Image 1 (cartoon, rainbow, N blue to C red):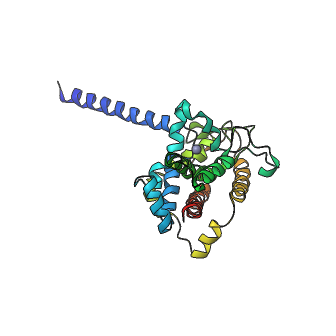
Image 2 (image 1 turned 30 degrees about the vertical axis):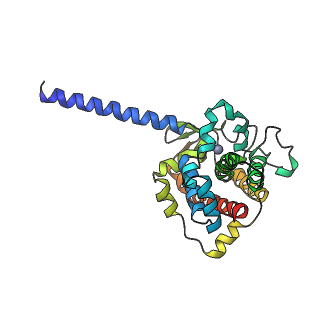
Length: 269
Ligand SMILES: [Zn+2]
């Protein structure tokens, strides 16, 4: 075979490989959840703020796995019909002008009742070990979801899922941009990202760790309202949007991690 033909063949093969890579990336980018990386960062930050007693209890329950390693479990089980009762736990819809206390909680459960249930089971001395492991994994994930503002979005647009937008020339939506696009396009691994988070003073950390689940929900709702006004339907977004909101994304990941540690230390410490 002439050299030029071999070269051509190699280039075509490389092209196909790249296309394959790109399409798997696209499929992964389609999922509607705070990106896998985001949840892992939150797990990693929390891990660094567990007290000794909590660390020991969790290491035992998770058989040595890290919080980051199990942080996406609640999303992975969504594909199994046996767990369909938990799918409404990942979000809570609150109208823009209402507070959580004003809405009737969904009978299937929502992000708030889900978190409360996890805490209750983990605190109860008669809970089985299997339940403790399951609800611990759920809790690690749900505290993460609570800090993606559009998981506290509005019902009429499914937390921003129905707000179609362009992200670097490709179709996306507001929910997905906040779940995954901004974080994934930043291009860092979860450990790199977690190391890159701004250093906080003890006072700043204490300030973040303060509060109740409902106050954190309220805070995410305020942020969600701001995010809703940050775009117009069909808008073409890219670098400047990422640049504008990157600090907010980092702040949410850091808050998620510190508060997850606080909740876990309250339960086990
Ligand atoms: Zn989720």
